[in-house]
Image 1 (cartoon, protein in one colour):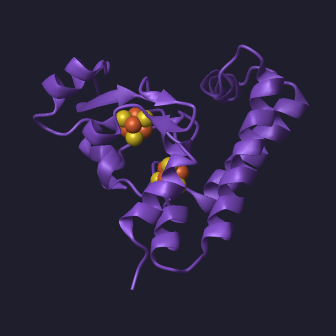
Image 2: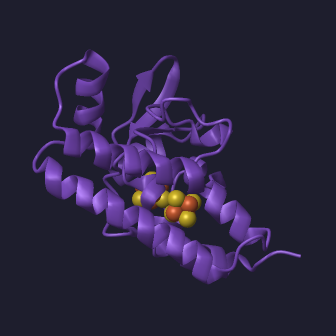
Length: 168
Ligand code: SF4
Ligand code: SF4
């Protein structure tokens, strides 16, 4: 037994974390989808031999996908750990909502401290050994802890810098 597809959609419509560029920074474009996605306004490029589009997604408005009926196949098939647990009835909707709300609040707090800087830029600075304010490190750590606990899957790329939604 599992939840109805409409209940899953309802959860995702209130979330959007996987589209926001926080969990991943790009998504795979399946073979034959290039033209259709380019016509929709996606920017499709090649990275490490994969056709991809960047995240944060240009089609995301708030938590809503503006091309939902026409969204890429990667988006149709991707399910984060919380969505999987919800669909398998391992957690109920209030618990799924709690995870989403808690994580999004931590992401919002980090963005406030970052100002104009992006989370990707902060990660690049840390990777390069550039000194970073302790508060930013702490807030990023909290975000990564929540993403790791609730959203990432064991086969996601280890540094979460690469999305292959197709493999998720
Ligand atoms: S992160 Fe999970 S719950 Fe949120 S929109 Fe993506 S698949 Fe849905
Ligand atoms: S196309 Fe829609 S579902 Fe896919 S990443 Fe963009 S906003 Fe999210």
